[in-house]
Structures are given as C-alpha cells and as structure tokens.
Amino acid sequence: MRELTTIEIDEVAGAYGNGFFSDIGEAIKSAVVGGVAAGFAGAIIGGKHGGDGGGVLGFGAIGQGVGMVAGGLIGLTGGVVASAAVGWDTTWQVVGEVAKGFANGTLVP
Image (cartoon, rainbow, N blue to C red):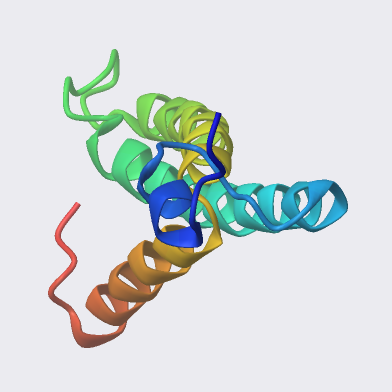
C-alpha cells in the first residue's frame, strides 16, 4: 500500500491530512464560520420570503418572523455540516464571496 501525496489527499472529498488535532481544529473552525454565515443568509432569505402568503391579517408579519428564525436555524445546521465537510479553504472562499456580494449589493436572496 503506497502513501498518498498532499495533492492526492486534497483531491479526496472531506480529507484533511494535517494530523489529527490540526484536522479537528480546522473542522471546528470551518463549521463555526460556515455555520454563522449560512445562518445569517438563511435568516435573511426566511425573513424576506416568510410572509409571502400574506397571513391572516394580510401582511404576514408572523410568517416573516417564523421564516427568519426557521431559515436561520436551517441555514446554521446546513452550514455547519457543509463547512466541516469541505474544509477551511473552501469555506473561507465561499464566505468571502457572500460577504462581498452583501457589501456591494449583488447578493439577492
């Protein structure tokens, strides 16, 4: 059985290869940053579209509140899982692109 090079390890989905404690730290760091960013995005999307049905009184404020909370929690959960799976480099790149889009107004939820 031959040993894998670092390039081959990077090509394997979910593989880190920097040593056990370093990999655990990277996974936690990725999960926290990605989870917060995805929770933020999910809350924005849920708040924007939560009241689209109009609600009982015609303006859907309760639906928007529930959509914001539910969207934030769903985004947080999905972000934690996805970020831990792809690793720090990809997580940081995606979060940076989302933040840039939010700052310059091109992010449309």
